[in-house]
Image (cartoon, rainbow, N blue to C red; front, side, top):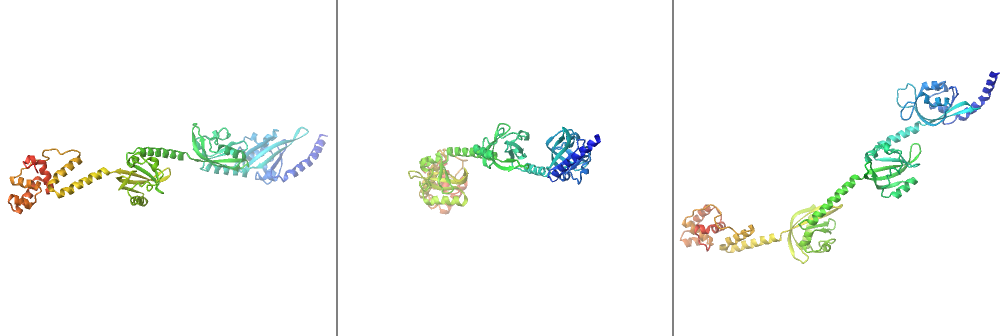
Length: 502
């Protein structure tokens, strides 16, 4: 009787299973049907393909056979115990959703999996009893390969980058470039929301960026201070680009460029320019700063204003031609020509005209410099007026002496003493020299400006004899000409008993 009932039940059940087979046969997802006692009774073509099999028997007659033929492991590479295999869980009456597994044939030497499955399972029951166990398999191999390629490319990208999932605004990826840039650890970033680690909090256009992020729109480049682990910040240039993850999740990829070196360079440049401005302002030498293009006066220092008697606001912004800074337009054009040809010049003598029209003789030097990114000409002037006057006085004294040789030595001595800053001291300036009476007479007449012929007449000597006396005299006192002999005699006149009237 019982046997007859079982046969009747099998007869009733067979049409249902065949109908189920026809429904799932053409599905792209794989379907495996398992009996409650662990027998694998049917699988569609998709499920067979996802295991590399041609028929159901290759999967194994039972769940235990399947466990022996295929090795399963989790996505992190950890082996999966046999008791945790999805088929085994179904046999225990468990239903489950979205289990991701790597599948390979047992005994395979290659470490890489053959397939990646996303599996779920449920139990069909009849009259409260488990009737059929259904395992549904989705082939995630390509998706995970694409994700691995994405991960590899993202991590290999040297540009610092973060990925924010738009659904919950949480960070889901961070590459090595960002970790090196910021000093954060990966687990300190991934999983946190943008509100916890706010990369836009100190952005130049924070509100605009956050609105665009909420709408999934491109965030244009902008500067921002990136928070660091030590409570400091780093200046960066960031931008956001909408994209999709390999699993089709909308996300925003943030990329960064380190601007901290630029900020430090700008700070150093600013400090350098401040030091230059201070040195320029306080320099004792008159200095002038003009633009290279147009030669417009950009700045002058205190010494320049004192030299020219101009006021600061009267010259800054104007051209040297407008205030007639130089003695002539020809001088100005010559300076501009020197600058345009070589970019600099040294020790060029010129005359600077003051506000009142007085000419001041100067030595000018100039060079090309860059200030605040602008090429300028920095010129310095050395006032040599007093030195020129001294030189002119000396020349006039010498020219006067050439007309009156008796006046020569005194004038030269006085001028030399003035140049040295004091009067010549009386007394011998060298070792004593013994002169004959005749040599003394000759020397005395020389100091009076007498020529050889005049000395010959005065001493009743022949001219050649006088010349011989003069030659011996020069040799004794170590001079080479009459002017030096006059100076030597004036230094020692009291010692030699010469006529002091000379």
